[in-house]
Image (cartoon, rainbow, N blue to C red):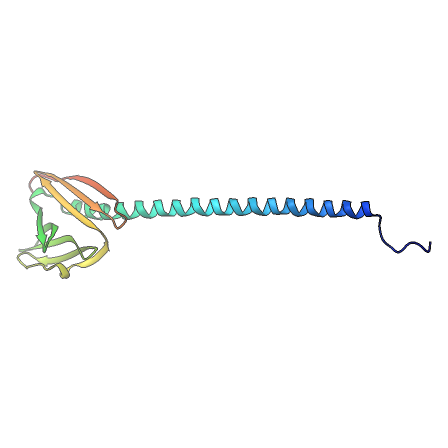
Length: 167
């Protein structure tokens, strides 16, 4: 008829508004939940990476040091000296008629290593940087060598190496 202007009754429009608001609210709840899952997942991932980095940082130096000692582990070939103010692990090895020394120490925030003929004076700047390291300590009692390393994360780890007696 003539009175029909295409408008729906007021109640029908209100129903569509309620449906739209309900759908919008449901979408907002879904979006907020998805965002929370992403944020929580990112935090878990960040903590996992931090833990792995810390573990790598604190264990790598000790692994390196113990392997170097095991390559030349006679008790009389391992001594502890100092380079500047830092303690140094000195590994001696015979090559022909000459004796050579590998000095391992921490200087300027790095674990360093230098290979020299026995008797050569080692300066702190001589060593090649191996890895960032806060500090390093070696203690030897008889044939027991204790290595303590503190990584850049402040985590301190200790390893014990039993040296062979004699050559």
